[in-house]
Image 1 (cartoon, one colour):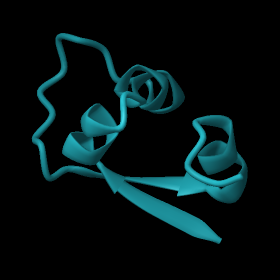
Image 2 (image 1 turned 90 degrees about the vertical axis):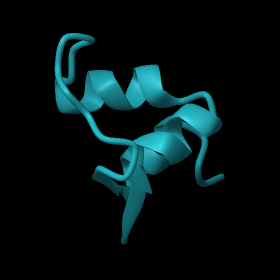
Image 3 (image 1 turned 135 degrees about the vertical axis):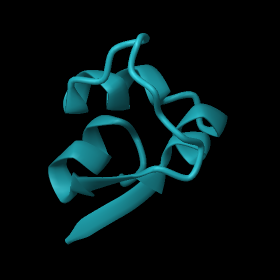
Image 4 (image 1 turned 60 degrees about the horizontal axis):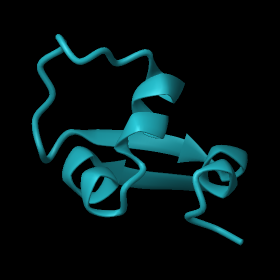
Length: 51
């Protein structure tokens, strides 16, 4: 299973910092609010999207 989340959704859910770490994004990187990140099922569980 794959979970797709946008940058805006991650910010809204308070998990953007964790997503940044998973994908090697740093504060200086340009990221758009509608940019999508594809998480594995395990990654989604780690950030609390799945229980």
